[in-house]
Structure formats: C-alpha cells, structure tokens
Image: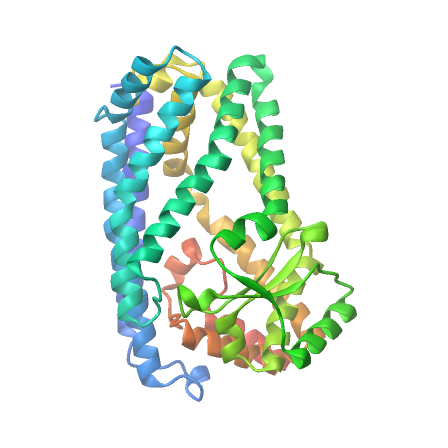
Length: 413
C-alpha cells in the first residue's frame, strides 16, 4: 500500500471520527441544557421556545451525523470503489483527450453527487424544517428551484471548468497562476451580476416602501458615509419563515436586501441596529479581507495541485489509473477537505472576531439595547440554540455564541 494511501485513509478516518464526536457532544450538551433557559435570556425567551430551539438544533445535527458517515462512504466508493474510473471510461468513450472529455467527466460527477445529496435536502426541507414550522416550500417549488440551480450551474460552471482545464493543459508549468486569475475574475463577475441577474431568478425584489423606515435607514447610511444602489425587500417568506438581511454586489450594483420576514418581526429601531451591524462589516473591510484571504488560499491550493498532478502516485494511491487534468482536479477536491478540517477553528475564530467588531461598530451608530432585542428576537424566531457545545461551536460556528455576544452588547448598553 502506497504511503499516500495510508495518509489519506488516516486523514479520512480522523476527520470523520472527529466530526461524529463533535456532533454527538453537541447533541448531549444541548439536550442537557434543554430545560433551563440561560439566566440572561430568561426574561425574553420562554421555556417552551428554548426547548423548541434545542430540539431543532439536535434534529439538524442528527441529520448531519448521517451525512458525515454517508460522505465518507461516498469518498471511498468514488476512489477505491472505482466509480471515478468508471465515469472516466464513459467520458473517454465519447470524447478524445482534451477539454470536452474533462468537462464531461466533471459534469457526470456533479450530476451524480446532486442525485446522491437530494434525499438529504428533501428530508431537511420537508421533514425537519416542516416539523418546526419554518418550511414554506412546496414540492413544485422545490423541483423548480432544483432545475434553476442546475441550469444556472451549467451556464456559469461549464465555461469556468472549460477555461480552467484549458489553462491547466496549455499554459505550461505556471498554469496555476493563470488559473488563479481566471478564478478571481469569475468570482468578481458573479458578485457583480448576482443582484441584478442571479438573485431575481429565485426571489422577487421590491424597493422598500416604508417611508419612515427608509428615512431612518438613509440617515444611518449618511452617518456612516455608505452609498448603495438600492434598499430592497425580498420575498423570503415564500420559502421559509427564517429572517435575515444582507448586502450584495459592489459598486453601482451594491444593494441592501431585507427579508420580508425580518421587517415583519423587528421594530424600525431594531432594523436600524441590525443594519448598523452589517455596515460594521464594510467599515472594517471584512468583506474585502475575506476575499483576499480566500483568493490567497486558492492560489496556494492551485500551486499544490500543480505539484501533485504530475505525480503518478497521486492517482494510483487513490485507486485511479487515469492521469488527466480533470481527474487531478476532482481528486484534489476530494482529498483536501480530509486534511484541512482540523484548521476549521482558525477560520471560525476569524469570522467570530469580525462579528464582535461589527457589533461594536453597531453600538456606535445605533442603540446597543436595540441590537440586543433584535438579536434575541432573531434567536427566538429562527430557533437558534442558546446553549451550543463550546467545542462544536469552535469548529462550526461563524458567529459567537449567543450568551457571549449578548453579554458584550449589554456591557456597552
């Protein structure tokens, strides 16, 4: 057995075991705290709402445990089980070596994975979300969304994959640098067209009509020196009762989008506080920092792929006899997550640090008490658990635990 085979299997076993252990820890921790509302939330969150949040969190975690085991099995079947080799045989029977064959191989694997993951999506939407009163999707809407995602993925993904494979095959030893430039250009293009071309495929957007709220928001934007191309309301309620708000686009396409469910639940002062938090991300350049970090990591990974794809053992050690640019790309995306999961706490810490900074900025532009009441409402309405397992949270949560976040805000308020 090749050394890399042993390393890969060990990494897969370690990652899978760690994910399972963290999930089981989280379930036990949340269940143990199910009956006791944290003291700092006792006045706002009822015991029933707290129990519902605990049950919702654990239902999602149990499904994730099943998916973790399933994903590990899929990885083994794709590699040592020979499925990738079979797909490569099919693509080679249809096309001569080149970009078309590589694109076909990647499309077939993508379609296969979509089919494999569909039962989890259906269960998550029509069982878990339905049970806890969040789902508004109908089977027809679910199917139409799936078709739209597939067509959009083909329209954007196929040209990208073809361009990357062409660069890998034709630009010499430094292909990884040119592929990185293509990848960056693609991401920036998607950011630019998302608000006006992509998002409207799935939701309806209308200008914010509440004049009092609009005036309040415009005052906040002016104080913060922030310009946007529009204040929009999205019909998020047609799919889910979860509430949210987000920024999208850049330059002239920059928009602030509110879920209609969010506006229904929060007072104007609370909406202003939530928006001030989002503005904090831009004030501290968090979006740009994350983009720079993402592009830097992708550059490093592309360089690593360039070193591995020339090594015969990289293919044979993973149960594949065909060495091609497309196969190298697929194997790399299968292998890397097994070795990088242990770094998840670093990414989570970085994200949580940004959330605290945005909260602090919000308290300078709006009342801290308004942000506190807004967050408590969102925790309650979204059935977010107030008592996550600390270690599980360390690996998975991009936002600070509710207790830590509220405590900081109350100290300011």
